[in-house]
Image (tube, rainbow, N blue to C red; front, side, top):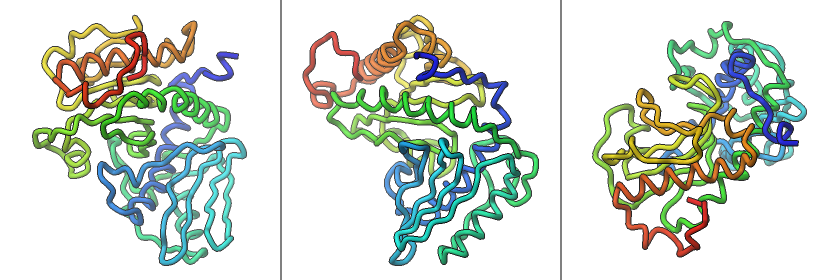
Length: 304
């Protein structure tokens, strides 16, 4: 039962599907970016979990609305329009260039033309979508496993915000890095940050963030992460739980490998311990006003 709820997701086995799906999701994400209002911290452009997969938010196009959903049960891409029109395409092995061509044509056929910047973000050596024939893999089993894991992560991670009464993000799936994230804010401005505008805006205020991503960059395995920005002195040395968690000094974040969670006696409890202990260390060391930001709760509670 645990393996069914928390299936294996070995990076090497699904890396090609992951790389292709990442680009497909960025195409849908760029459509969102072109149409969504500029809500703080890029919250309006994030995708969200559905009972079947991941969807863009409801997007306005003139006086009509629509959404794009990746259905990982039937393995279809669906564009649903408020006037009753519906377009679907099978998710199958195909190049990013073909996916881009078909989706953009479908939007034109539905009288929903959108112009996007066709360059991927947050990946090394990006290839323009319309030229990318390198990424063309889709294994439905692993795509389904990825979504099932996200559902379980969301089920456990979402309630960890319940005792926090300060500003907190929704549970967002960010298509740039393919991570499911939940972020708490102290309410205090942060020092100016270098980098692209969206990063400067994302970290304009002090945050403690928790999430999950399927492996990339410094950590080539699915993992949970936690970080504070700006990072307070002493956080690297903080003791956190469970024992499998550690501070990744090159990455600058706490890491809890997914494999350690899914094989734990209680995966839910392992995640709660990770969130609670990293939040407690970061909020204390950064001198957050915890009496104001948190509800009073029993000391045994493990929600952040």
